[in-house]
Image (cartoon, rainbow, N blue to C red):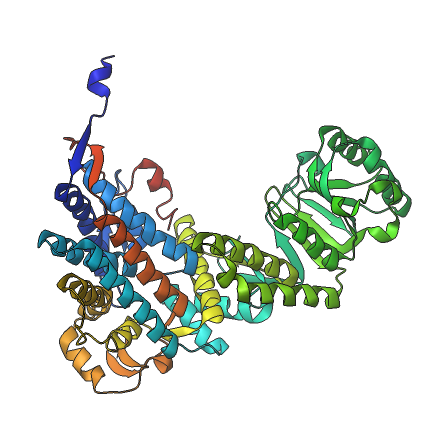
Length: 564
């Protein structure tokens, strides 16, 4: 083999060429997905690599996933935009296409400013100050106290206007609350099914398949088990023997929840289980690091158990039946544990929930950085979900594998959007909230502001309104004419419903966007552009003679929308 011929030789791009090369890839992606934007968005036909019929879709995420460019530098720009935009959808359930359109417009205009020898630091400063001003204006517009009907509208929009998905997602939140656990999985029929359970769930499965009680479904299921909570590794057989003796005497299964299980202890548990002496299972508690200690105390409040803590000098040699908790039923698979109707102490649980909520209120001022703030907040929110002890299982139905994968994504988008709306409120949808916020920015105040700064301001304002113009264009109307009509109304909630083709109150029309969605979109778009403007070098493969890899390859053809 000639290794030299098969080695991909990189090309180095510097300065403006690097930036323009990345931007060219972003342009390809944005041009392809922007036609799908809005309720009247157009379809895109995607060719299969085999002999199967082409796929027709107006889902921007699907379109974005199917584009690969022959030029490595262009592909790098495309991937930066695609990856960052998809993170928005993962967080708040929607907004991938809008983020792509917004970021591309901002990147293109900021890049033109650099080509005109404007100062990039001042351009970014102008954009950042305007972003802060826009977010403050959005807070004044948003509404927080939402009815189930209004939440249904939020979920419907995020589910690509599928009202049945939005309605079920909203009703689920009404049953389990914003802190409850909502699991979405494939059903076995063509109808969607919803099961509500009083229970707590976390992402830790059984430590050995030897504990499995149902071989068909590969799960462990116990009724009325005893629960041991231990904050450190269980390494010695002598530690677990007293607990097994209690379980055997009571004739009840034993669930061991510990930071780790040593091989010898795991063997003892497996042998007791397999010989029918004591039904056993072992799992790890929720949480990570120091947060795991707090989670054990949460589980203690939920199950009536006593959490054995090293910091308190507690060992298992003095354990009694009263130290063990219980639950009506426990169900464990390879990845997840569900306690059904645990024997919780409502007073203790509510007390811990109150402490967590107070911690969430103070977290941002105490945290040293946004990233650590996000991690701490996520850990606290996971604890709230656990303590809420509300669990919903949505089984998604469909007639084909392709349809069910598509509808799974719709349900996930709807769930994430509704949760975001409950927590932080909603805004007028379709880009109108940003249009209202932009109108409040004072562009006439030019005192002590450089041309570069003012350019950054104006460009940021124009860019974040581009999705609005694209939605109107895709609906077959002139953006300038519609905006003039809407501007005659002073009400911030009046806008244009592209689906109905009329101007009116967007709350009544059901055209709503979660505040967190809009905030995340503009923050992500500006972050992408910030990275692009500060990039002065690019290393990528050279252009090849291979045709662009467009459409579904053989693997994707087997499940057309597997990653939707």
